[in-house]
Length: 216
Image 1 (cartoon, rainbow, N blue to C red):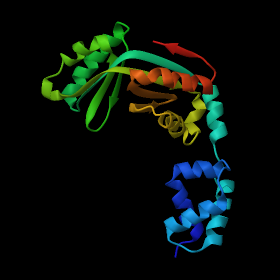
Image 2 (cartoon, rainbow, N blue to C red):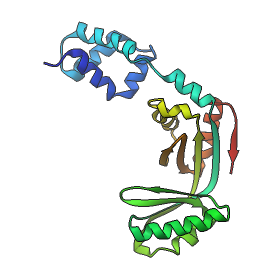
Image 3 (cartoon, rainbow, N blue to C red):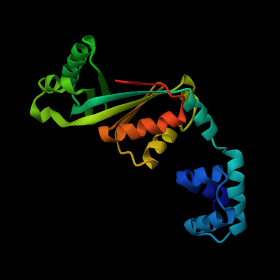
Image 4 (cartoon, one colour):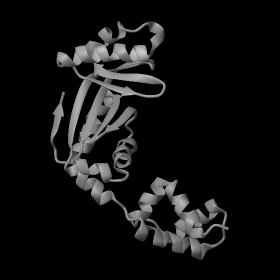
């Protein structure tokens, strides 16, 4: 039989909310032990309890490091954003590259994210018709407008800060903000959401970091 400590560790790893509460020292160990016993189908209360108490010592919370990184971050906010997803193919990639060049050279905002199923083009609303004109109807998977783009630019240290993107994303989720797309590149985290959520998101993060954001 696997050691109880390993099973408890695996349980915590798949239950992040419980793990955060445990690492934050805000749970009743005995009550949590009984919950975990039921989930693991074991009667070894003392073994489960001991494993729970040991876990934070060997796996300390990184929340203080996350907060320090956020304090060094800045926000960029862009409105009237549209999202066009086209089918992934070599010919479509070439057409998309041409659109990117034209829009970028005249100072328009455009981002490209290539996935397995499609190529996502994030751009200003006034560029959408130009982009769509380059593709046939069957090549366009979806088009969505009235979006906002929230970009959190953090210090380079986040590259080695495990779980940072998940931490920032959890803040957005618990505040009831629905994110349409998220992408993390280098030290940027980009969230695409309905414009109606932008004010709330900006308000939340302005309280968590040095207030320094640019509005596009």
